[in-house]
Image (cartoon, rainbow, N blue to C red; front, side, top):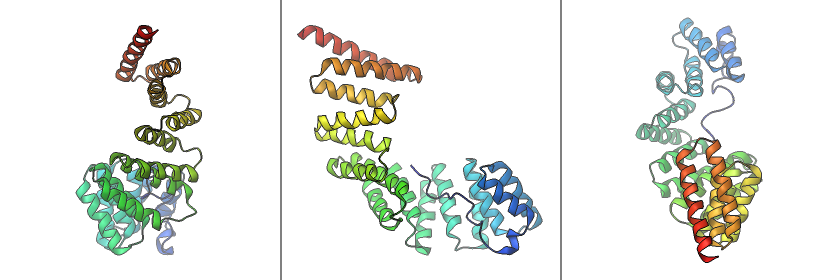
Length: 287
């Protein structure tokens, strides 16, 4: 999933010349843009030490802390930025994400709700709120938010549209809405023809729907993109078994076992070996 609440540059990187002219702020922005987030934090801290009322420095440091996965520090800085400017939508957005990452769903939802009161057409808030709803297993509410995000997002931003369709498709899967899920994953593939997640999840939806041949085809496409995708081998193998293609099923399950083993997934590896043993026993019994 895309972290739509994070930009490629600090949220305040293009504000007033008064702070952009300061060396520490300029250096912090440059470091952030280069991906040197700890250096950015250090520079923004210097700016704050020079001017304790520098809202831009707090906001930028909040965003840098998020990239460093220091979410408590991010919450503190975004809260300080909001003390200076209670209508700062980026601070609400980034604080919401920090709360979300810490599992503080109520606080995250409150931030996204407040942002949408200030800016009702911000697709990022709808999308992030949808992710929180899905984490809480409120899938219908998540689907509504994802739909709002899709309506507000730029039609030219294909990567973002693909991600939103993928996440809405997953919510549809959870509700066993197979045709709707397939439609979302198909849309994601139209926006990104190499979308690994969409092919695999659409294969799962086809399997649940009973369209086993389509499921095999999507699992095969998944493996063309990611040849070491253990779960795709496993899913294709189980589907081949249902189709009565025992040799193909065994070949896939053996590949899945090899991949699980190389990835250190010992439980999945052992479970797959058990499946192989049972399938071989069944094949011998009817052979």
